[in-house]
Length: 312
Ligand code: NAP
Image (cartoon, rainbow, N blue to C red; front, side, top):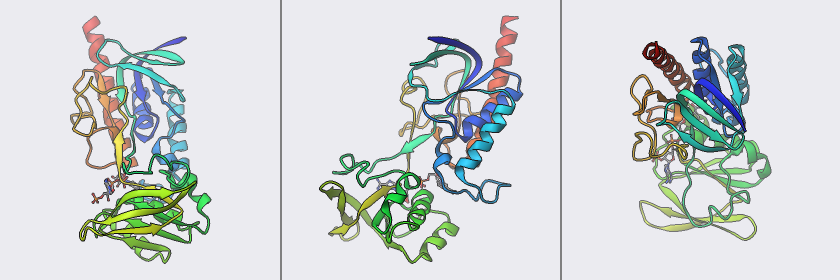
């Protein structure tokens, strides 16, 4: 097994992680990004972004390629596809063990992001890959001329529903209230799209089918009435849970597991910072993740400098 020593190990190679990498490496500390999958993070799956300043409109994958090239320019070392076995944040140095390697780090910057929340209803797990999908960009083309439903009322649900209208003959958007949470400009586009139909005040109670999804049972939360909706596929987009499996219990987290930081992105453990979607933040955007990365890395570099002072 290979062993590495870095001043900073960044867990997660999305916008927060790459931004931290750029700032840390420019702060002249040795920097690595370790990721359990391919680099790029969540935005790699976004069809398009039009709110990342100066980019006007850019594909998610293309934007993340630019982040990566920028980190490469400063010599950030990249370790994608690492199966993490353990993360010890409380030792000094901190130790990250993966199936492939062991990393020692003076500081760890956690940028592991968040993953889709599940509906938690009967049939959801059973039909994953057979009509239940959490990625419209990955699976949308399987639904050419079919009828699909998206669940949720946030930016993700509405944008992904709009994307699905490129393939599907009809896209229901099932939302538990009668008002969307998504940005007004995104809402307006969805309301103007003839393939979209909104199912308000409703939650999914069951997902049913034989080989693949055939219908869902809905409950109207205002009237208590149940109904059946015939669909070929369902895409839940109801928010995210933090990716903290290897971190739980070592660090202060909120009731949903998001990591609590101060304004320098420092966590409850010295030398450990959390940035982007994994932390308790009021806004989860590429721009805020990148901003967190800059702040966290600058303070991680300052922390490394204080360690040098102690040893002198
Ligand atoms: P979100 O904004 O938290 O929205 C989650 C939606 O799911 C809400 O409408 C919520 O309903 C609904 N919901 C939550 N739990 C539910 C349940 N158990 N059953 C049914 N519905 C449920 O999550 P998101 O859309 O994934 O977005 C996450 C973050 O990424 C946000 O900050 C968002 O702005 C950002 N984002 C931005 C862009 C962009 O700017 N282009 C694109 C994608 C995501 P309520 O409204 O009733 O709470």
